[in-house]
Length: 147
Image (tube, rainbow, N blue to C red; front, side, top):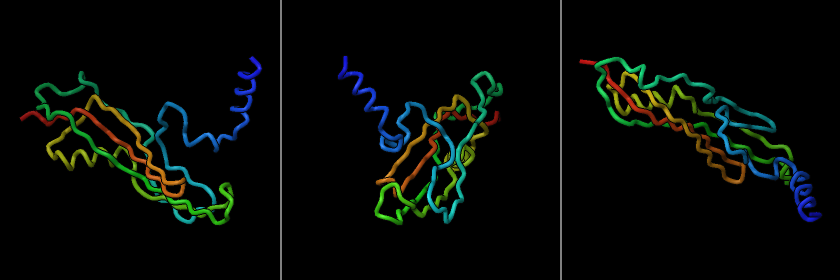
């Protein structure tokens, strides 16, 4: 019992940053994080997206099947000191919004009039916390206007 209590207390005493980046189970879409001395920040991220359901699709619409699109934000954080938690110089750019991901879908399938049954995922790629790429992936069923 003492060993279990000691292990729990030790786990709680580890600083949040040492546990890893976003160790929770749920995706929290938003802007790519940055820190330190910000030199440049021009980024858009997903916050909310209202979508249609199969019931909302207009009668007679032509089904186009499953489509997908993505949009990404990029961030760079270069440490200025030798200390890992020291000051860094950072910047971020990119359009990782839902709007950009849907525009990507419409570019791939130009006859798309609307989408429904939307599923959204978030993919994060990071190299030692120096470079980070955060992408929004949208998969949906598309339809075209009735002829």
